[in-house]
Image (cartoon, rainbow, N blue to C red; front, top):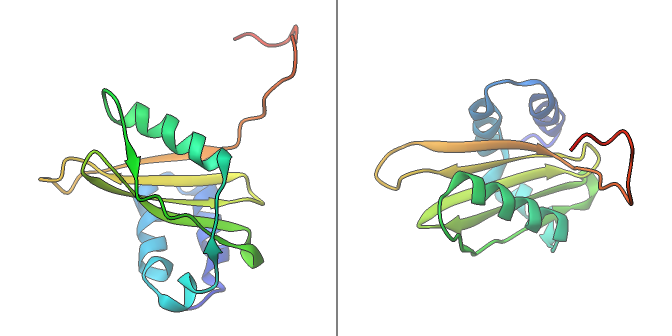
Amino acid sequence: MKIDRLKELKQKLTKEKDLSVIWEFYMDHFADHREFTQLGNPAYNEHLNAILGKICQQLFTGTIIITDFLLIYVPEYQMFHGPFQIQGCIGGVIYFDDLKMGLIAVSGDPETSEVKYSRFTQVMQLSGFNRNDRN
């Protein structure tokens, strides 16, 4: 494993249009490499929990239940990553705190090889009324 490839992963996350390319790069170079997973510690991030819930609600119909979410934070690289399960499917998330950008990948139907992806950025919440807000 070459940790300097995280820069390449960040670049792919910000520029690559095919989200599967980003996820495959992460899986090939980091996800299952013990030396990478040992760089971080278990973490809790309310923002990522909320985003994961909202995105999975859009990807799946009905009531969703997310289980086995094991979030790891690697402070040296300002990166969160971790697996989770939903509706019998396996998913994963990567998020760079310095970029305020991440990617979620979830296997679709357990009987197919379909994977659903969602790239996301942090959304700023406005306090109070803003005349320029059109929503």
